[in-house]
Image (cartoon, rainbow, N blue to C red; front, side, top):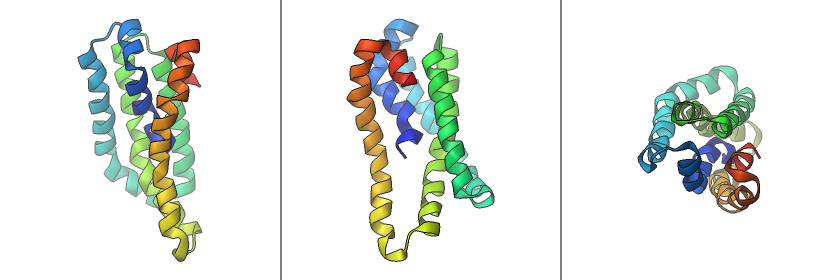
Length: 151
């Protein structure tokens, strides 16, 4: 869950650095959130069907791989166009995260533990925000925003 949202958390935490280095407006930086969540909203209905067809394990692997590619592209972005495309690509992991993790929990966790395991799973979203907001933002002070994103 943390990795599915990491790109948006990083853009929020590192936004002022991106505005300066990529010469994008604060408005365009704000548009990244719209693009990311918009792509996720469009892809989510399909994401659930894909998880049913392909299975949660394969979808979780795909989620992590696509998240890594999206983060690598964000870290490589020379300007607004690639930045927005990378954020849109990052909508796919967001669309897969809940159906894949929920189905994995149903398949592997005994019913009496599903509530607590699902709660721990959902805390990954906040863990991702924490990781972007403290350690990676601090790392950006040393390694630059691209180094923090690639990390």
